Amino acid sequence: MAQFQEVSKQSGLHPKPAGLVLQYGTAGFRTNAKLLDHIMFRMGLLATLRSKKTKATIGVMVTASHNPEEDNGVKLVDPMGEMVTPTWEGYATQLANAEQEDLLAALKDIIEKEAINMSQEANVFVGKDTRSSSVSLSEAVLDGVSALGGQSKDYGLVTTPQLHYMVCCQNSQGKYGEATVEGYYKKLCKAFIQLTKNASNCTDDQKHLSVDGANGIGALKVREMESHLKRELHLSLFNDGSTGKLNHQCGADFVKVQQKPPTGMQMNSGERCCSFDGDADRIVYYYTDSEGQFNLLDGDKVATLISTFLKELLTQAGLDLEIAVVQTAYANGSSTHYLEDTMKVIVRCTKTGVKHLHHAAKEFDIGVYFEANGHGTVLFSKAAEEKIQQLAEDSNTNDERKRAALLLQNTVNVINQTVGDAISDMLLIEAILAIKGMTIQQWDSIYKDLPNRQLKVKVSDRRVIDTTDAERRAVSPTGLQEAVDSLVKKYSQARSFVRPSGTEDVVRVYAEAETQESADALAHEVSLAVYRLAGGVGGEPKPLH
Ligand code: NG1
Ligand code: ZN
Image (cartoon, rainbow, N blue to C red; front, top):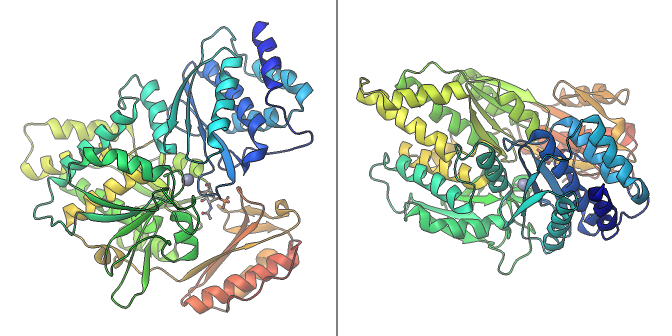
């Protein structure tokens, strides 16, 4: 077939380094940008096949999120803006690792297994982040699409959640919104302005937010959006990419893991600040208090704020909808206690990785899901959206119920339900704080985080660690979980777990305890246990203090 001849010809321009093996992991392929040209071409091919199979538009996003500038990566987006299914993740790995001469056979294998009609048309949306390598890598994706005769639309520089949004808009025939960047700003900002109309007496101080753009795409997009906000939110943008390096000493991942402010940001005491990550799908908030102490409000605090707001609105609206919060093992223990014991909402714990959280959140009328690192969103079931809409349009309802229903309706519209979205989350959080007349300090005081520490341990093969119970317990290697259990017993209010990372060649260690000293000591002792029992390499982990 002519299509396969074209693939053969084009693939010669995107050769695979012999012997290189990469895996489609938690966040797609991610490694040094120099190793990715053939992967991009092949993901263009795979997205075209996925489009033919689903008879829908598929997205391909070129980004390595919070990784260093030198890295890059690629993720496929399914028709409703979701991550691709595990079977297709498997195909992605097969196709990526086929040696040059075996590429056509690998492609034909997928076509056969999935019974793909090759005369079906295909559409692929492509987006990229601001990394310099993203320019040629996204060209390689487009080459892959055209080699198999697919149509593509290149959105150029967009955030990851914007690309997810475009795919969902396209496949819902515009019901979700207009598949343009302008359409995205219009929908979100209109909902934000409607929401904040309910915030009477909102002062200029309350309308001000400092944003750390991680020197990435989020910064560019915030600038683009600003005029749509009609000065209802005043943003001071730092780390906008004009001078600094992407994700270097800044961005949501740096702030969360280091538990300190980004460089390049002017912070006045008490002022509300937030950081995006490199592709703007994560957000964390923070402030320094009058003693200069740094206070972080991570994904758990965001989930608590949003779910409290939604629960109050449901009560006011008299709507009987089940609301749940989905977290991972990294959620601070205090947040889980607060949600379960005080807020009385259902809490679920899943494995790390948004696709697991997203999946679990779909089980409820309203599913609020957030990773502690600030990646998350809210999902509304179709039935929930319909009930909210009916009530908002019901002329026989009283004023309080109507007001709550309208607020819920605008909340649905400000949220990007396809995936965690720093811009959309920021607008929702800002609207909630304005409506509730709440300062960041008041939000922070809803519950007090248990001090915690995250560490990494290098081992020769991280796959020796196998986990169960949403990654909270290790089942191998022998003796590791017992060692963790006995270390945890030494400290008050302590918890710890270990798991192999899905995005880096390390084992992650998490510990929390009553004091920072205890959390640090426990994390160190557990790191030593991992090093000794799971094949540590390099020098032994050193104590933090
Ligand atoms: P790994 O490397 O598997 O821990 C990290 C994050 C995840 C998720 C992915 C994808 C932590 C502890 N882990 O995964 O939550 O965001 O990256 O980006 O934050
Ligand atoms: Zn990201």
